[in-house]
Image (cartoon, rainbow, N blue to C red):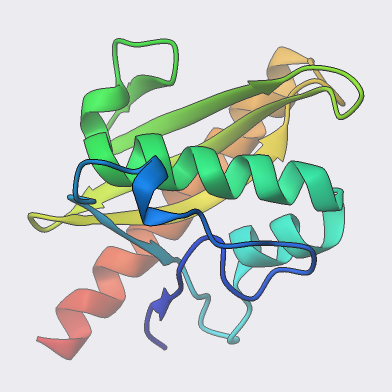
Length: 153
């Protein structure tokens, strides 16, 4: 199975494209969703199934205006943190009425690609064990992705 390429705002119910005037700099990174061997796309499914319409819009806009522009350079800012082993998290805090504390686990792949491996809303479950479980899942998906890339080569 491969990677699913998708504009982060396109195709989500209730989403609207961001006007190019709102993004004065070109986007340096392309986002791709990790696709499991069974064809499921966990981050895309989480966005579609677990987030409200407004949360999808805000996350999509933030991923486009921050993550696609700066990539792994979000680490060390309020938007990201390096987790080691090629993994980093993209963070987004939303205020009421759609309060959320999103964590999206990513891997910089190649020169200009960010692979989206896992995600959850830390505001719904702030338990540190949950965070560690989600990071472990993202690490397994990254290992799976790397193994399938080697098999293709």
